[in-house]
Amino acid sequence: MGKLLIVGTVAFDAIETPFGKTDKILGGAATYIGLSASQFKVNSSIISVVGGDFPEEHLQMLRNKNIDTSGIEVIKEGKTFFWSGKYHNDLNTRDTLITDLNVLADFNPVVPKNYSDCDFLMLGNLHPAVQMAVINQIPKRPKLVVLDTMNFWMDNTMDELMEVIKKIDVITINDEEARQLSGEYSLVRAAQKIHAMGPKYVVIKKGEHGALLFNDGNVFFAPALPLEEVFDPTGAGDTFAGGFIGYLASTHDISFENMKRAIIYGSNLASFCVEKFGTERMENLSRKEVQNRLKQFKQLTQFEIELN
Ligand code: AMP
Image (cartoon, rainbow, N blue to C red; front, side, top):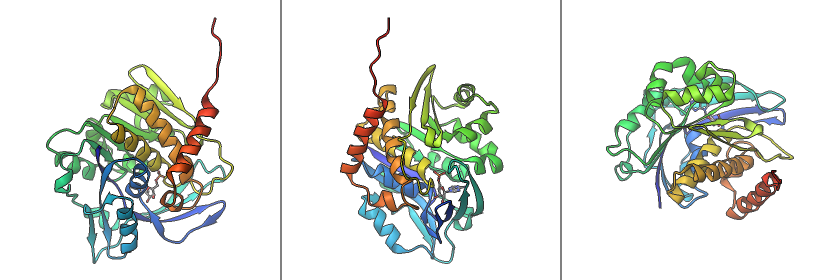
């Protein structure tokens, strides 16, 4: 069984979509990644930081999913990272209303001792200096290092982010961020430029339009399942990344062929995440539901054609 170490935010989110509004609810990149990866047979651990305002029941929920939380530091006198966003009518675009770093502003991550030999490392979305500090605490390079990031860090900490990008194997970002990072409109050109920055594999997430995997001239595309009801896209990207690395860690196979399957697993899990507000759907998702939807995925994408 693979050992998966995840670093990222564990947060409070306040979300507004055309279908409603939430008060502060559980969110954070690492939360979604961990919940998604917990669908596979992996040992996983989250490194993050929260404030004294963070309810113990959320940590317990993660532990119930077999996620090690000993690397989530609790700063009693501090406040948990808070993000608030509002989605446009198309649900593909959103405005960030508030990003309060709070305890994340001076976070010094500590890798739990029993995870310093992890073989899969997921650098979820947060300050690139924190991502780098985690890389530097792992003596033997993991089998695979995956990075997810967003425009906030490109706008504010581009130089530090570029140093992290040099050290990773796979980057997962959305289409607009790929354009911002590369300065190229075409996603094929963007992937080539990002490739040259370091990562051998570039995954570009296109929301309801699926995801692309680029590697050395090879391209693979996975659609997103057309859903009847989409309530809240928050966390879909992280859920996708968690499914991608969770599957790879459970199979211990990082070939391009297996990455294709990992992309399908990631898309499949992300399709559940968006069906309810926040983490609710992922907290209550059964293996059976996942398997049934995978069958739908197969039907959606399979066709026979005769080539002359
Ligand atoms: P996604 O919808 O996949 O981009 O992820 C949304 C999650 O990312 C939310 O639960 C937020 O708490 C978290 N988030 C938002 N902004 C940031 C940021 N600048 N750094 C780290 N995590 C963030």
